Image (cartoon, rainbow, N blue to C red; front, side, top):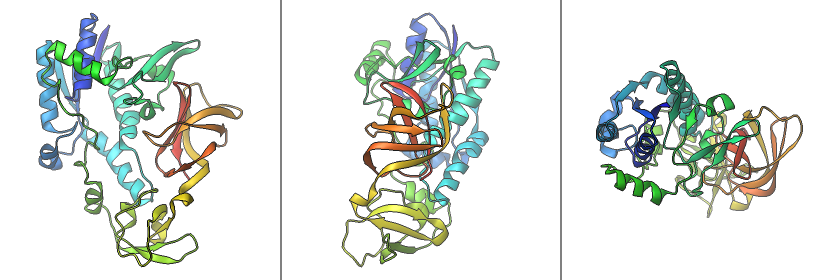
Length: 349
């Protein structure tokens, strides 16, 4: 097959390219230039999958493997489809997942369409997930390595796209991936993982938001309206957070229960108040199409959260079999049956 590999300069995508080449496929490496050029120097100091050094690493790996390599500029599209919605979500009191939006609206939309339009048979990435053939067509499944599984950020994929995607690392654990990198002689074999948001330096999300969004101090209140302190600006808080408050006039610990931008206040409470068994979803998609009746499943409400038995109702309501602490609006709720991804949606409330 003729396969384009999305290469980020990390060990995972580099090994994916190497394995596909060994399997006899015609491989071409492609890196998406998505980082805002105005912030390139800042990103370079902190690394990440969108830094210029990452592009150079990808180019070095492609040269070592002997495969053609290209860098496609999708900076404007990334800004429109990922960065701007990221800002708007925080202004609305939500906690967005930009990696999910990047996969949904850039990598497996714009990039995949361009790859297929250029005559490639498939697009491959270094994601830890599996595409398995089911009775009704391709299915998305969690990776063999539960600790590295990335199926959560891929729930939006449909069968038409799954048919043209390859995840060569889906059956591997991370130690095996690094072993392959050493065997192939890749210069990124021991490269640390990049886990931060690609356009924000590690650990500086609040600083990034404060420099780009209007923020003003306001009240921290309990659910009954009692003032217990102050906050630094609603975009800087997310449900479940227990730090970063201003002056407190009542002993904590306090946890964020709700963010209310319209009233410029943050509602806090005790940890037990975070728990909920009833979650409303919006923008719900299913790989097999929407169910017409209630659906028993397991729901994952955070990227690394443990799946919780649940029942999904067609109107977008998710009833959990046990309370979950910290279901944050803007995050994704992904629905599974065993290792198979059924679909998911954005938490509305």
